[in-house]
Amino acid sequence: MMMSDIAKDRMAHSVKKRGSMSSLSGQEFWQKELHRCTKNSMSTVSYMDEPSQRDDASRLTVQMENTYQLGPTKHFPVVIVNHILKDVLTKYLQEEQYEPELCRQMTKTISEVIKAQVKDLMIPRYKLIVIVHIGQLNSQNIFIGSRCLWDPKSDTFSSYVFRNSSLFALASVYAVYFE
View 1 (cartoon, rainbow, N blue to C red):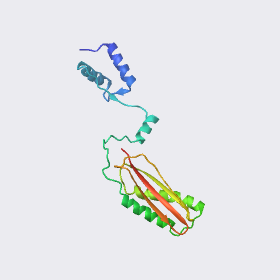
View 2: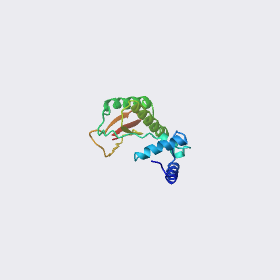
View 3: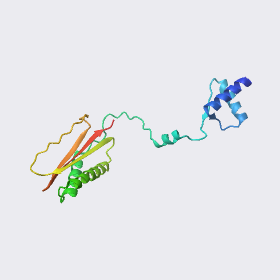
């Protein structure tokens, strides 16, 4: 069965419109297309001449497939994180005196160090929140509270309180499982 010239033109137009092409020469392409059309199916190979900006952006993002994993394979190691908190707070604040500007910078530094050390544990699929409070120790009371909406089976936290002669520090790490 031969294709009419009108059908060939329509097919060529639709192939060009879709941006599809075959690696075969023109004659081989049409013979191959004739064979495919006789079986009531059409197969083409898509291509793009020039990559667009959208393609560059799509290469940068990694599409992950669903794992349908509802719980952690490895639970958050609270005891190990407690040791990290104790070591970091003791190392940075053992000999320090309370000065407001210094303590403001120290809270940022200490929270970054704690976050980096906890991330080094390579616990998969946990989002980490690290909060550090440093205040002057002057015979006063302070209550620090936090509230979160989480799943108690998989989400957890770790905290440690440090005191020396002039300041106190509270460091907390919240680990929220990312489904």
